[in-house]
Amino acid sequence: MTRLRIALLNTTEIDTHTRRNFRREVDADLVEYHVADGHLPETYNFDACIVTGSRASVYWDRPWIGELKTWVGDAIERGLPFFGVCFGHQLLADVLGGQVEDMGEYEIGYREISQTADSPLFSGIDTEFTAFTTHSDHVSRLPPGAELLAENEYGVHAFRKGDVFAVQFHPEYDMRTAADVASGKEELSDERLNAVLDGITNENYAAACEAKIVFENFTAYVREQLPTQSSEAVTPADD
Image 1: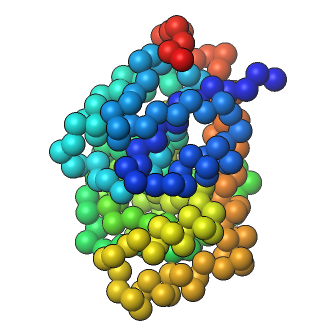
Image 2: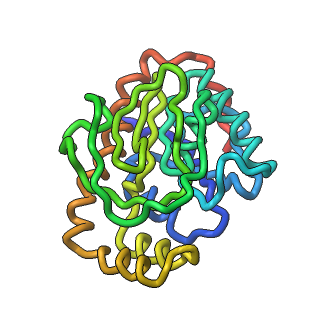
């Protein structure tokens, strides 16, 4: 079976974990582009695309964010399936016509999330599941025609529109990443930071590993779509 070729749009500005985490969890040939440094694919010759998390906000006025939105919008129009995580989730919502806003607070740590609709993305995952979260922005309004897939008291945690899937939580995180990211949140009080760090346990991580199935489900979905994907998505390779 031919391996999928997926563009990994790495939107992190300062991060040592993203590449390792996605390459561990996604069973595909990942072609990585460090978007925050101005690198974007020159073609659309991929089976799908993944947009990672970032410390940036999608509404910031930074050239690379605007350029990424334009490229992603064009790729979606060409029929490429997308999967977004955290910042990627918010960026996809924005590109598709939704709204992203500052929550005025942080959701961080292992949290409970509830599915709200049947979806191939969550096949094999309990209706109530655990995942690591870290964000202060959220999708405050879904894109027109999008389906809410999961939520909790902080709001939207997953949606789908056509071949675009997105999750607010971080299914790719391991315990080391969770601890490092939490420790870098200067906005948190010492009390809250310590509570988050105390919650990064083997037991909570084991529970959160169930959510990693979304990667397997996404790649399975992409494989199912390959025979019917638009020929416009196929152009000469750029690497």
